[in-house]
Length: 138
Length: 302
Image 1 (cartoon, chains in turn blue, green):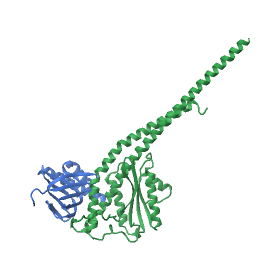
Image 2 (image 1 turned 60 degrees about the vertical axis):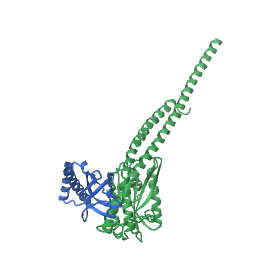
Image 3 (image 1 turned 180 degrees about the vertical axis):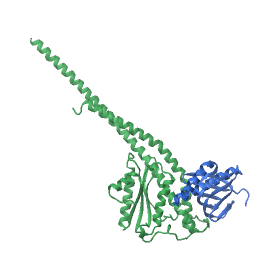
């Protein structure tokens, strides 16, 4: 890796830009498993599963972001992560995420297996994991 | 005399009451349009990134996928029409409805059946009044849509798209929305949502530049499968955001001209009322003078 190479990362949710900036690495989970992206990665396009992504910023900070699925594209050191309801982990309250997860789980247990409920569950799970991870990082 | 003074004053009072209402609505629309525009701007990065990814995928992956391949034989299409929930916004809804009607006409001429989906109470009422069937309709969020709404609509469209023709499925999806070009220019647009309209030439690599060959995980087809529903949602989301901003801009303009008209009406009514009052006074004076003259004449004769 050439000295001074950085990734330009752009994380966007449907209704806003979640995070944007330079980063040294990005770690996230695709349908095939965890993947870490470093500068000069080959062009890459993958589907993500609901999870918490970690971005190591150029200033050496760790940014945790909750993703409810979506996908990632990498090309020429530009990383874009698209996730419909992506959120920064430190903006999420653990209590709220737990409550949401409980609601979704209750619905699932009652036999409601609709697309909406499953997405709700995925989203809540990802947010809870991300919120907890953000606490550890700090 | 054209109208009595009392009547004129009454009319002026009612017009100024109307003016107060339209003025208030103009101000409300003006304040909300800023919010709608901000929402439209905030949603932009997602939509642009989505288009970029889908274009790259569809252009360079060389996979045949039902969502990207135009069906040879289009027999039934879905038409999503976005209008407003309430009136008082000039020709906004009427223009969208007209555009949808033109598209329907064109498709009908090609022998294609059109299935309608309506967003916004105005469009729904229009179709209901004419006894035109709709497969599904949504209302209540035309001026402040949320992403969940777009998702709900898009998921219904995708489901019908993936259903075979024999079971009531559609071969293509069209959307009619109003594009917000500027505060004074909003045009209704009709666009094909699916199968994808990949604009050739736009994303072609330049001379000497090599377009990155993506590595797909798990594989191009599964990625397309996962991506396209998100793409359709993002398009519908874009349509809703644009339409909401257009609606408010249109409302502001309509209310502004209504306020101006009311002001003009008030002025001309005031003038008429003054004239009527003056005429009344003149008449009274001439009656008194005439009466006094008659009395003086009578006294002189005695």
